Image (cartoon, rainbow, N blue to C red; front, side, top):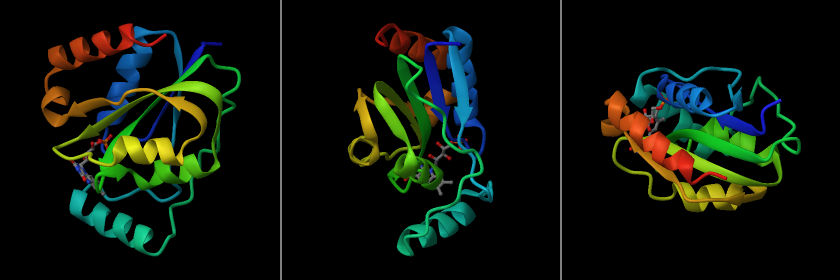
Amino acid sequence: MADTLIIYYSSTGYNKKVAQLVADKIDADVFQVEPVKPYSKDMWAAWDVAKKERDEDSLPELKTGYPEMSQYQRIIFGGPAWGYTLANPLQTFLKNADFAGKPVYPWVTFYDHDEKYLADLKEQLHNGQVHDLLELTMGILGNDQTLNKTLDDWLTQIQ
Ligand SMILES: Cc1cc2nc3c(=O)[nH]c(=O)nc-3n(C[C@H](O)[C@H](O)[C@H](O)COP(=O)(O)O)c2cc1C
């Protein structure tokens, strides 16, 4: 078993790509969070649903359960910014997940705004030590060389 667990959510594939790149670079297991009902790939249609869920305090159900985190040394936690904060499926995940006191290294993907992401992550995550946030803009994600260099630099800081 690997000593690092990557937990991520991805609706349109960017975070999946990041998770796979990171897993190729280090020895890590990968856990993908998936809602029972996938969101539209159209950003605005997805936002209509996600916003309604937030307004009605009815976060989505997950079909993927929860990994046992105590057996890992560290957790890497990635996902997209939705409405400046965590995507709804990750908010559901955080409500029920116990990070077993482990260090947590987060990344986020976004276009131009992720203002509340790190503060909200720290507030919502139970029993983990959250480190600095790696911010991956679409500009970085669209350039494989830049993305690989950014991830390599980041991974040198992960212990
Ligand atoms: C419901 C929804 C809300 C979003 N809100 C934001 C936002 O507040 N700021 C931003 O820069 N990008 C926002 N985006 C763009 C996403 O961050 C971008 O599509 C995502 O990082 C792609 O990751 P994925 O392919 O792994 O799903 C939003 C996208 C969706 C679907």
